[in-house]
View 1 (tube, rainbow, N blue to C red):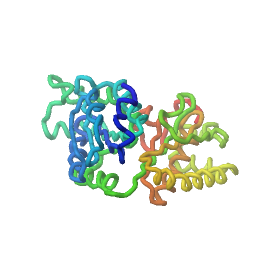
View 2 (tube, rainbow, N blue to C red):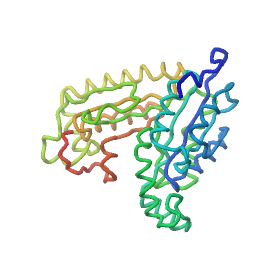
View 3 (cartoon, helix red, strand yellow):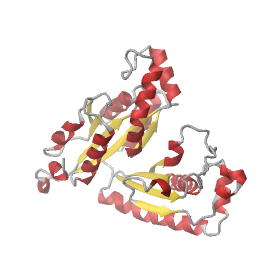
Length: 313
């Protein structure tokens, strides 16, 4: 599959295909999201095999935006196949694509399956807990491919629909979703990052024993990093640059921009900067989601606390 597969008569196409791919674990609310998008005017297709997506888009522009539900139970679903499809779609000039991962904590998923007495689709003859664990393990790498995460753990169906409307309901207006990532240089730069900033020059909380076990979401860590005389000029310039470029990217028709901040361990400095920049951009009216890759890798934890894993942040 190559980008050329999506370029049939592209010179004659006045607009791009607007495509939203929805995936996530069973019970998290994927169907509710698809229904909400349908109510917002999207054409919705659920459980479409990945191999059929290029054929679906190989034609004239769609009259309305398209939302596709991707189910891990499909026979051709795999992390590699989805990563390849996403890369090809993003490389195609006539496709405007966004991947949304509908997420939920494992204990909440178990409670939902217990309340409805449903069998888990990946463990029809076993307990729901086994199916949930199996599916979360399968979808872990898929989660990392997403442009947007919607965590439904504490949302009612009504609140979830409102959240979808808030992100996708601005009909006719230019849209730009901004994702801000923290990461560890030891594990490499995040896939698809548009802008990357190195925070390793800032003072490192890892070398303070009282701060080592915390992460950049903790007030103590944020205050420590902010005391570096270089922090505020650096942050102000990055914010000014973002506020300068975001309207230009939006006017150009770009649907998503990823800004990444890295440090040694991805626990302290980069996390702190991501938190601060995300809040500043949201206050300025931009649609922002944030990701802390290394914090997500270590599993659920109380915000602001760490595992003391020994990776300098």
